[in-house]
Length: 126
Image (tube, rainbow, N blue to C red; front, side, top):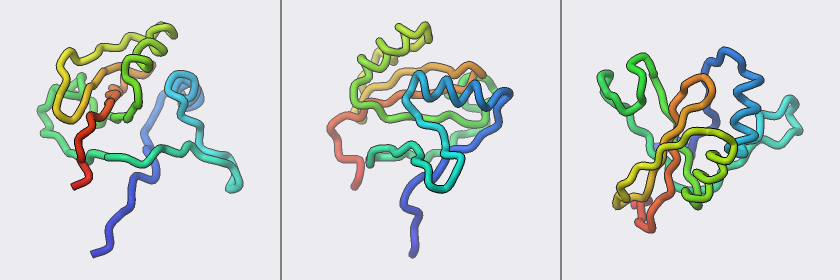
């Protein structure tokens, strides 16, 4: 069976796409999509990606009307939290360390949930 090789993009609606894109670039280092075919898009590092639908009544994403949440892998969760807090962004680390790593939660300026994940040294590729 042919399979997809990864996520090629994340697309969602925004009240102010230019401002939100700038926030993601300034605070999380995500380069904007190129405006021409020769441009360089943001490149992510190879690693585990979890694809998991949740039940409609989950509270995990925050607001009941929230339909999605993005999870970004990070190398150093503590450093990322410090960087975001220095920029005045509220970040809530999960106090528990799980077998698959550590997590923290924040919201972008439009209230979209973002989860940061520092993977543990477990092999999730099996």
